[in-house]
Length: 298
Image (cartoon, rainbow, N blue to C red):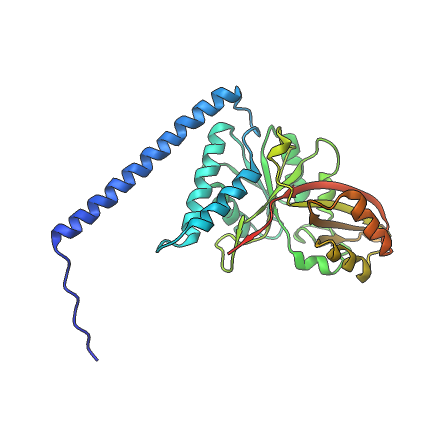
């Protein structure tokens, strides 16, 4: 069956539409320049452009949620999210230059994709062979970020070895490098907007030195490093009863079980310790290692 060909639109209509697109492009550019002017004023008001002073992970998560909520039309959400992430990250970099250090022990491509999608090409990208190296690079910097992937499925079974190429969550208790006052902490979990076939959908934690403004942290989820003699199904159920999850797990040979747990921000250290104790997995140590915003799924 043949369908009649559509008549070509009049040339003056095409010209008008293209002129409208040009007008919108010019307005968007002008708005970006205007945004840059506000950043200049912001730096002047804060009286600093020191690295690390501009991160606001809670605000960024809320902004990305609003972007997804209001989006409609032909343009894919992937593109809109990517544009906003580049705008946010680049203007943050303009306020306070920083680098992104990435653990590539499980491969570079996914980490590079995540870094470029969420932070753009202006922010320097620094690959490292292990999570521990990333954490130490962040600790030694003025205000850089670190990213490393994790696989929640790896938390279902303990691993006993360490070594190059194994990746985080497979024997290396990388989260213990976040323990202690002044040490880097988790400040975000990426991507902010989760959905199937996300172009940078690898689960990634972002770490930074403690924020200069504690109120900027988002505490929907709090991460705890736990050591205990043994981990059981009953202990797993106890964490689930608090609406929490095991993020990573490892047990070096002959040593205590080591876990990274994520629980809602309303669950305090005492409540978590009591739940574990009641399940026969009394914690010999319990240390907060950061927090992040709730995941927003589309």
